[in-house]
Length: 77
Image (cartoon, rainbow, N blue to C red; front, top):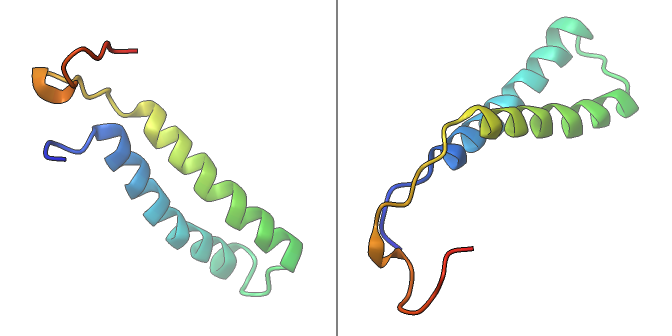
């Protein structure tokens, strides 16, 4: 499987990586280090999902220009 990684995948991966740091910043500077467990769970679920979705949505689509990407006889969906 050779070829470039699609820009949407790269953007979503970067956002998921950065979101962990942002969750930590919220805990330290907004809540003063004492984040209630229900709030911590909600933030840990919502922030990474939202950032990953937004990054994937905003990134440009990577067009497939390689004619050998499809097997012989397959039709694109």
